[in-house]
Length: 238
Image 1 (tube, rainbow, N blue to C red):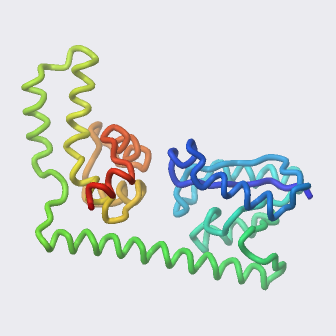
Image 2 (image 1 turned 135 degrees about the vertical axis):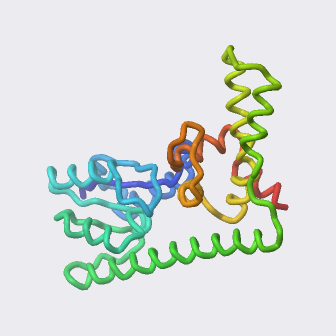
């Protein structure tokens, strides 16, 4: 059997380290059989909530050109939006999910869209729970973030010169990042991921140093500069 494989990981770190990716590849190979010919594979680094998937578009185009099946390890690797999944199913490409029985025709489409609707509901409930956790933390008097971020940055720059050299620029960048440590740590401890953190900061009217909107990539880079991995956040919470 010939097929195109599609994999998705939520973060660049997962993609580079193979976290989650190896399991997806194993699931696809096992489902198709050891003698199957995986003609090509496409790996997306993006949240399952987002519909703009360039690698998925490439995979679907490849399937249409070559009249091949698209194989995905799990339904939630493809989409957590019932509407988006219907768009994929109506694209004319046959999609096989390793975690679901292969049911063709209207019954198969009903099963898949029902599963996607459940995944979409679950994602919404998780978001509500994390927001409720943040609200409860604020009600308990927990200080989230750093309200004196701007003043702290000005004081740092004054104390360390005007940053003429690269080292000075790095120190200033570190100071800007450090001013976000408390708020980002609290959000991570409440279970929010990079995408959710970016959405919350944008909803609050917060902007990046350059005055732009926050993105998952910007949050990831900020976390890398601060060394805020899942392990460090868990240790701090404990």
